[in-house]
Image (tube, rainbow, N blue to C red):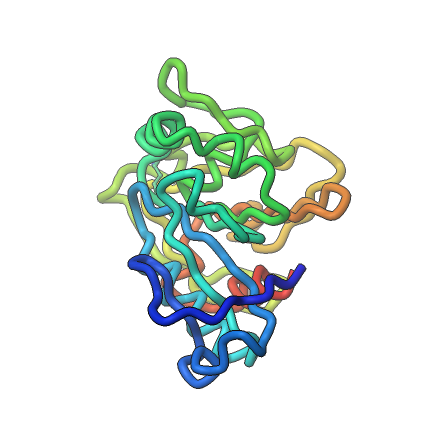
Length: 221
Ligand code: GLN
């Protein structure tokens, strides 16, 4: 779905437009508005990946940092970055964002963000509430501690890419509607689910650090 952008004199703090050349033509070009949950974690890395994906595709994208329900105005899809899923759950609840996120047409979660999307969390803390948007389960810290972080070659639907794993969860597919997008050996580390007109993507690793392929895919959905 395209959002028509409005002519305005300045861009509010926390919003970015790309590419710059198209930005100057606001009012004429329909723009997709994508939110990045900006309560904690790898926010800037996702913004950078979205901007370069947008440039590669030649599709202008407006990016909104989402901290409160009002920030979701006109947002068509949102990225939930990595960080600490237990903290993120609490911050989402405090910011009253769970409802808004759950109604997005498309949502992509990386690492802690993927944990939030799951319908089941293994080794979560007591009271940690998943958003239950995807038929996957996520076992927290299943690849080891921060010190055990690693980079590995992954097989993905877009070919081979490097994947960075930082206290990554193990993702398991829990429903027939979920398709794998990326593998680390035999293990599914990226998954996609379409529910009606809605799209959900979860990654155990951090695609925003090494590739723009999945951000391009997300923009195009
Ligand atoms: N281990 C973290 C958690 O459980 C996720 C780590 C990350 O997002 N890089 O939330």
